[in-house]
Amino acid sequence: MSHAQVSTTASISERLSVAGCVAADEEAAALVERGRGDEQYLEAIVQRRTEGVPLAWLVGSTTFAGLEILVDEGVYVPRWQSEPLAIEAAGYLEPGQVAVELCCGTGAIAAVLNHRQPTARVLGTDLDPRAVHCARRNGIEAYLGDLADPLPAELRGQVQVVVAVPPYVPTDALRLLPRDVVDHEGRLALHGGPDGLAVTRRVLTAAAQLLAPGGWLLVEVGGDQDHLLEAAPQLEHFGAVELRFDEDGDLRAMVAQRGS
Picture (cartoon, rainbow, N blue to C red):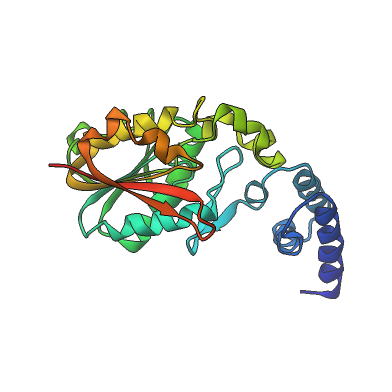
């Protein structure tokens, strides 16, 4: 990096820090690289970042579980907190088997499954046409539609792994999310209804239809949603439910195996 680039990066980092960006130095470097010497363009994307536009939209990609994932503007940005879910899901998938990512967004989790088990067939679905387009750019066999509805009918009862990061933020908690998330990423990828589980319950139903006996469902949840799901009739097709917590002890995911 030239002296001029170093100076420019430092100046941008200061602006981003004032705007509340936590990793200002790293973001500034990424924006400078994306600007490719075009000062006008660089100023435009820096200004948009200070206004809260997600960095991944501005630079066109993000890193997820060690992979570069393309992220089109308007598509939910995959979070590092979902990486353990993707890695665990890949561990249940064997060569030649089928996996499905519901609510796939960019297809980041599906991409991890493809990378770790390249002979498997990995599909994704999403309601957002922009997300489906983006997932396809990431090499995913993605379908536009509601959960399992758009998938080929012959997959019913043949899938080994279903994984999902559905919208699970309760209505009253949307206002507590970071500014850039609330202002830019959209309710479709976030809003889970009054208790946050409106879509998740439907994911359980769709997974029961798709999974082969002994297949695995992995779904991201949060807060105290495990207690809310305990009595969900949609779980009747699954065996014992296991929970996954992060290093801070916060609930991150639910894992269940399809019964026979």
